Image (tube, rainbow, N blue to C red; front, side, top):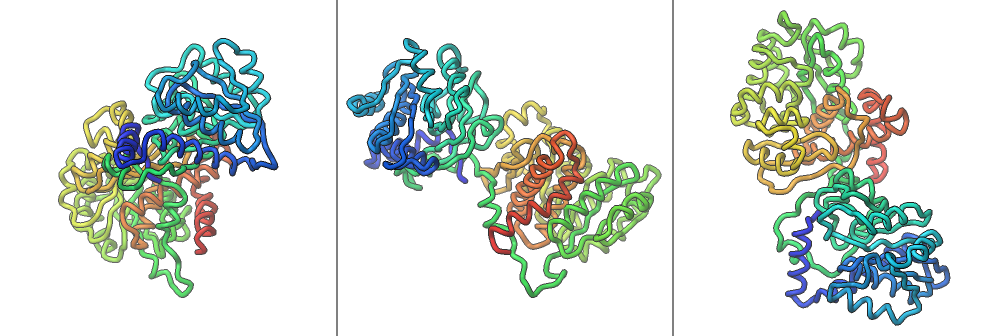
Length: 520
């Protein structure tokens, strides 16, 4: 799903206006489309009307609200309008106000008649909130904060127009007080707050409606800010399995992970590769970790190799690893690897010699951060999967700087070093070289903030790469499905108690949801 910022949306509106679809026409279209979406969502018809309270701000979002009120009144709904800050001040909202003013609606000015406003909110079947839209730039205080608390206290279904009042459209930040919507009707395209946390949690179900702005007019502002990674985009990319096939048709993942003290990382990475559908998985690991790893892995082939005194891969393991690489369709390296001279030497050899796509995670990233130009020695596509701390080591930026602009950080790094970046965390970002936009994930939860989650994800990415999915598509699918499995695990075990192993165990249920919808 395409996501435009406030500025991009205003540029698109200006382009439409210049092409003959006036701002007033766009407002009428928006209100009519939103009214239609509300009717469809709540089963409102001329035969089955409801009590509707529309809360209108003074700007253009309020103008959309007046159109909605008029459209619902026309089919017989009992409509009340609450003027949130008084009568409208924008030219087009004034016109829409004049059109609805003559209809049998109950007009209530909030700041002078709060009791009537509260009564209209508490007794409504549906509340339509159209107060700020994308225009909010400062914290919600005073009468607006009070009004939003009244809306949130009602048991009525709450619909927000474009974005819930109190959200920053471009960051998803809660600006003091915000409306908690059950249903948000996004006008023309989705906005960042519909996807980014914490704002997305206030949007409820989201539906995007067309208002007559063409694709060409939307492109006037350049590339979308980002695209969301959702079920639809994953289903479009998901590899089909041929009924007449064998393990050789689904690739061979080589997982070079683990050490004596981090055996679990090797187990989780290999498990992710198996669960992701790879035909074969080989788990290479230091032989001193054999008892811990072999007791947990039954599906993968096991390749124990020489270890050094620290219990990590020895430099003497390079020849065996090189031989294994010749049979691989994709390679995952770094999970639980350890950082020392031997592992650094091994990673450099893998990067230089690999002839299939590489996924580099965890300690692999930490090693690269000390010699970042080694990335340019690769002959194959590389996916890096850093968390914010690892991204800080790669870029030299503070974690705070990275978290303040995750999307641009990932895009800039991917383009500078010719790689695909999976910047993990809430709303994991996928960026790939040659693109100015990114993809932002919509699944996952705080229960996944535990050591081992990233190892499982790395293996899952490797599995999709082995099935000849492109790097960016493999990353997108993996982060979505990994997060979906985490959401299933959280529901089953709780966010507090769930573990990365629980997420791994829930991968089949997440994948089955995708497969059922596309008939795999």
